[in-house]
Image: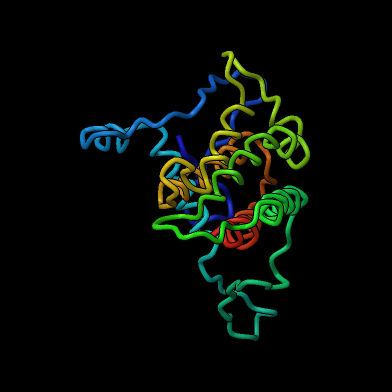
Length: 218
């Protein structure tokens, strides 16, 4: 269940207890027919995703601030590049991960031939990323996140790899859509649940996630 953290204006996605082994499941496509949507809307996964979305949204709500009691409060907002948004080491590492993924594009330049849909070079980029994913996560995520106690054969690392790899489009269909964006949100939300981000009562870590991770990903 979601709870509310002091200083926030809404629900907060619960973190898993590291002393209790968690049941991890390697992600797989489960929405294939119309009735599958109804099942998803009543699932724990949907609850957690919406809780995390609301948590991130709430962190960006303007705040009333005042330098002293004699000064009327002013609304504080946060824009891209704002000096008031400080990136924690976790955010910095994930930004470097995104930069590494972007850099692989230089190794696999777009195909210049005619195409009806996406560029066929994406398939080679995807295969390259897939081959390096384990190392990239090990380089940029805390070991305690990747090695979180598991009650099953599947691990936290298995879930995170699948979510991140599913964030950039389909190598079969050469398309990209909201389902892939949802996969990235699941990747970031999973790191939150696994304790990979700092817990701040002011919502500053969530703002850094929005402006430092979500925005450059999109």
